[in-house]
Length: 293
Image (cartoon, rainbow, N blue to C red; front, side):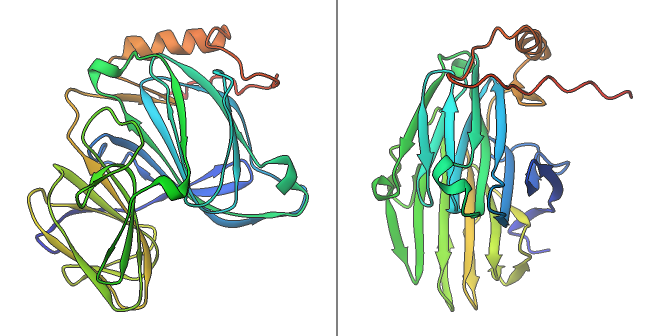
């Protein structure tokens, strides 16, 4: 393994309703990369006509969810009353803070014709000072996100800062989150402007300082090193990371917190349906039963 690569993370397959996802974070070799504690690659898949994505209302605490699509569409609804359709290139950023409930479904107008679905969903753990913030939701259209061209690579800054540009998305600690589109034969140098960095290959081919990364895998980069990312035939790549969070983070089901006590309180609140409801929806996902050791 190249000295510029600290670890290579391989995905685990998970079924999420009508979709199979590749789950890369958390991993044994890297529980977090900067503030990123969860990373799912959904699709690519084509949903049959009449079959949609239906993630029923469920809760979160202590994190922000980030949705970014390459294909398809998702309707987001939450307990704040937000209702927002997301399409490719946009970003939905939902800050759970002390607690929020949301659902994710195929929009009604797209359900009947069948829909290609392909995208990335991540969770960003909140720093201690913002763990119990009031929940919020924001949507940023693709045209509002900074886009940089470097040697045949198009870099869209989804959240945080990169390459001298800042995304409009609200972040709570130093954050790197960029979608990179490589044309055949393109390459650029990724400098160590963030403490921790990961490189995920969505599709295509990618070499990191000459070492190939397989599609669906994530390379954790060595801190402090400039690395060259290159593609012979073209690629879609996600760059993620940022400032290392202070303290430990616990993760259970949809909850992230700096203490197990906060998670236990959230579990009780959800079981009692005291975390809020999504307007117009009566379904909800029950707390999973704890598996026996």
